[in-house]
Amino acid sequence: MSRLAEAWPRIVAHADMDAFYAAVEQLDDPSLRGRPLLVGPPSSRGVVLTASYEARPYGVGSAMPMAHARRLCPHALVVPPRFDRYRQVSAAIMKVFADFSPDVEALSLDEAFLDMTGSEQLFGDPQSMGRRLKAAVREATGGLTASVGLSATKYVAKVASGHRKPDGLTVVPPEIAKDWLAPLPVSRLWGAGAKTEPRLQALGLRTIGDVAAADPKMLAAKLGRLGLHFYTLAQAQDPRPVDGRRASKSIGSEHTLEKDVRDRAEIKLHLRRAADTIGRRLRKKGYVAFGVGVKLKTADFRILTRQQKLAEATDVAERLYQVGVELLDEFGHPGPFRLVGMVAYDLAGAGDLMQAALFDNFARRRRLETAIDQLAERFGGNVVLRADDLAEPRGMTLAANLDFLDDESA
Image (cartoon, rainbow, N blue to C red; front, side, top):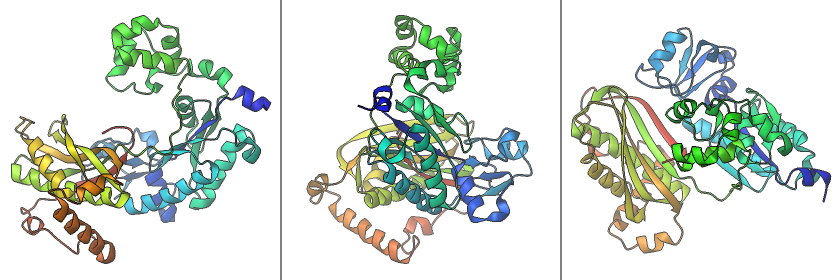
């Protein structure tokens, strides 16, 4: 066994593209380089999907309401997203990752874990692995940068990749990982969100080192299983393997609306569009869903969700829409709503599951939707329109359409 293998039982890399959507726009249009850029809908009711690094000193960040971002940085350029282009660039990046490791766990279009264990004969030590990975991404994309972190666990590697953004490289050897994490704020713990962080601080825990030194029984009593999860991470322990075979957990589509809606017919129309988008993406990727969820955001930005497990998995838009409409009855909120979304979750490969589906109640519908997919592939997405779309209420327009493939949550 080599000295490196003795010191590093595993070598895990986390690669995260820098301001990916904005960087692609600046790559494709040189006139945008060096200028503050907000990728998202031009409408003030949408949200920022990505802010370029030139815009971030003004306090602008992802998921911020576009109106607020434009007040903070009024001279920023707003560029509508081009998801087809981002997916194209992402495919080139993922191909680079696959050249470095057979075990690549993609988290989204622009980040992934790579298990580099045993590859030191090919790529050198972890520092060399990171340098070569970053160089290969830059070459394959024509100049895009990735920040890379390497350590012996997924958690530490992910924290490390964000340590020196943009264009960073941070290697954290396992023997110093716990001490390296210690001074970082508890917000860097995986799973410590906006609601959990104040709870940790109320317990006097402000750094990861504070959590590592805390009594695990106290953490479990105050925070339940999440407390023990944080304690384990704070010890720089994370036994989860890099799972290159893991399917994404959800595919969704959501729209921020130009005008708030409360009329059920209008909400159903948006659910119909979301179901069509999700069904098409499920079939294209070879997935079926065992669950459907609906998301509504009220005018005062309160997020409401309802979900339902399915007795039989599906990739049929009509079935997704049917369940979505049923879920509307469970909200009990009069609105108005500024966002309508749907998600298909608990995904599995279609494979043998589809054999039984050849004879289910939606078999005919599936054949119709598959035929429409083929027409859209050849002639464009608007070659076939629903009568509902032709009868769209006057003035009803969308501020943003976010179709997503999400690996973290449903």
